Length: 180
Image (cartoon, rainbow, N blue to C red; front, side, top):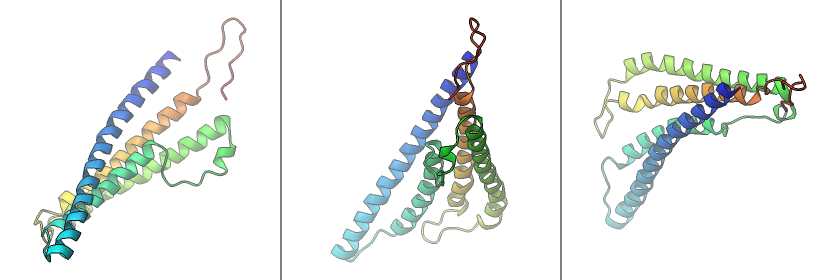
């Protein structure tokens, strides 16, 4: 039992570390998006001018914040889900349903990640129209985000299992403790 607790603690620490890094990146990207938006509006309507790369940079930052934000929401179990019936389940059935759901999320994200690389190889060599950077630098956000989401889903599977595992039988009474 102590090994399950240790695994769960280490996993929670790893998940927290990765999430903090992603949240910092997302926050910084949103800060740049907000500053660019305000600057572009002021420049456009106040001075009849613009920042040449502004709109394109905002679009690309939004792509990254969406890809990383989806993974972070999965880490908190805030992803899109309809759990009305699942919340009514308890015990082993609930654990199995939760684990299957997380495995399906991981599987879908791994398939998208896998299929993204050939797509990026074919269309990623073109350059962005204004910034003139290879589109592969932008498109790589998709497999990175999907890989992170799959990682979080697999970590969630381990967490669900370790938290639902009942304590060992009591040596004095020979009965199992309550697991619910």
